Image 1: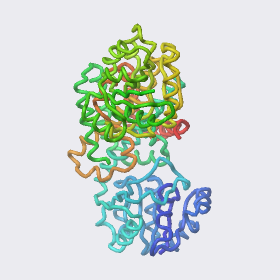
Image 2: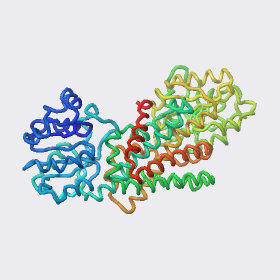
Image 3: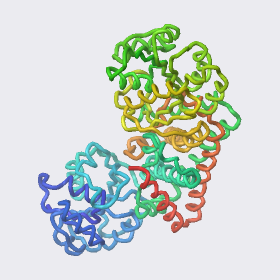
Image 4: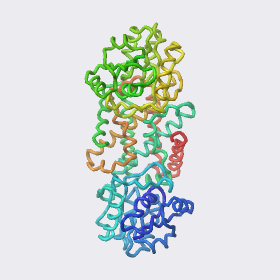
Length: 279
Length: 279
């Protein structure tokens, strides 16, 4: 079957590279509003051919939506209007608003809403990797709303991506990702801004950037085109977790201010419990 | 020449492994208040032999101090009392308080104060790596206070570690590292605490931990024995940067609360400037 990838950036390009030549996969067709990205994707061998959205709908069995979530929100209803027995897979980082938007659409069953818990801080076709998804978790949301055959096809593709599956509803998804993904990006960006501000007065600061700094701040390289709409669509959850995170930092500030090093020691030790989750 | 490593953990063990068998290096002697760590270091081939501090002072040309900074603060005066023409190298993560403590010591010249901008979130002899320092930056602080021959010997060792050198005074060092290293650890720890707190009510949250989360939070695995005294000794600088960081996060909170997505877009784009510093 032919697969159309709508949005040939990091995620779409990596889907294309990962599926290419696999059992049952026909042509990989790239669709993108940027002709430059399409040309790059073709040149890099990420897609077999490029097409307009309407051409891709005609010639593909599966349409994978891998554009920023504001684009998904506006394009999805139109896309569902146009499909018949094709499968539409949305891979956006937010779910609640997007799925509410098409809740009563007559073709809702053709949509399978997935979110791969994988990514890097880079964007564009050049950032695509053929092993981005391997061994990572794919979140399936609101599965009962999808037609059985659409789910089966999406599930086959997830298997070809060599991912582990987990299931939840859109609301749970958005609450969890605020904690696990969206806040990490915000803290990284805030840390970058803090340090960039300081560098104006202390030019030599970056000579000292060791590996700890690099890993904590690397998400601050992420694209504003992708992240602004994620924060917008998941605003309530992000505000909640941001408030908690600020209060944790304030607690540390207060303990350090009153020099309660016993309590600081205990807090660090408590934070070490993250070891049981991370490898 | 024989090298004594006082504290055979991540840093000391890595110094030992990196110097072992190099030109001009004799025996590597391990000193540690933990007999268990000494036994491990010997078994792992990190040190050639173990000794008490007094034995090590007698049989070594260079004594490298790689214990937590509270240990350095209390041990350094005693160590300088006991040396004659040996070189003492302190590798602590803070400098101002430690160097002020021995400012007027008659043997101050035997001390070379270095800080390798390298590390991992792990600790103990098992965490030692023979390539931890390669290509990284070594900060030399208050070099004019060291005797010329002591500096030359320390500099030879830094060359054997294959590190790049940078020079500053203790005050600059502590201000810069608060921004580049200490705050990264605090944000990581606060993020871990935020998420661990949430997990109590939402048990499935960690299924979703993708690579972004892991890299942002990995420093929260760091040892409280190492980090509590760092925060204590660099309190004033850390409070300053923590205050700035909290205000950056508060700014994001306020912009998201009033849904000013144009301003959020600009902030993310501004944070992207960190790209020109990080690879």
